[in-house]
Image (cartoon, rainbow, N blue to C red; front, side, top):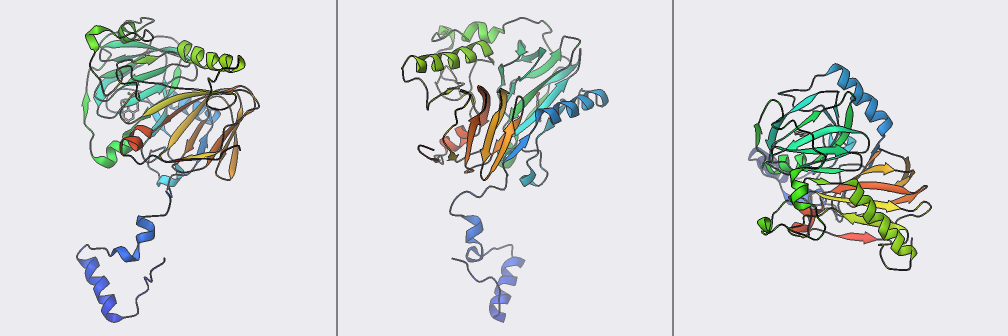
Length: 357
Ligand code: 1HN
């Protein structure tokens, strides 16, 4: 129902004027905006091409030093629906970060939860609470809230990756703290495997020194060899006639916290999906927002009424309750992160899947 907001009665006009003067707002003139029938996100579906992002990051690498104060050479995806804010979605920050040869991004810590995902390259170590974590193609590296972290590039080639953080959510709820740490990194060694992985990354096995539940995962690196093997085996099992995939030709894994079996961090979910060439996902809508990065292959994202061709490195934002599906042209690997843990924790989760589409 639309309520008349045009006022003809002088007494009513006076009342509305008096409301405004007292910083009061009558519900009946704006219920439709406050409570739409379904989510009506300001964020819009949007695609950033890696072939656009990388050269721009490279130019920043030539022109802008990295160091204390600015802290990171990270260039945020600013959703065109969000009025110029550096937010990919209302809850998620996503950026391309670029670190030149022999450069160091100094240590700091913040309440915001963060991860890196590597679509190409290697040679940077991110040092998380003093534990050096190698960054290589296909790896998911975590910096949970309040962990000190800095990055250093040991090689003579640059490296770029994507960062995902819950910055918009933390800003909206006024819950963030920040502290500077060491100007360099506290451990410059370059081990293949971090101490966290040596302690925690053995399938199905937990060290008895850490039997409690932790709100964020103690694993700082989820390695491509494990992700790839898990997806490969799902499709191999499907070929052998076993129920191993969520829909035909679609293998999928979620990165989890081994102490709870739940999401890696309280605010961010991360998943990896693999589609066989020629298959597509069912069209669906979900409450909450998701960012995808194509890892390998080519295909199409259907977003509402639009279709966009995507390939390696391209980033796709799907706002809340936007209908989307993926069509794989070749075998298609895609990394995904979302605010689903927030939505589910608040019991606001809803999905609508178009069956048989
Ligand atoms: C940050 O610390 C990183 O550690 C990346 O790489 C992006 C954006 C805003 C504030 C801190 C990082 C960030 C950030």
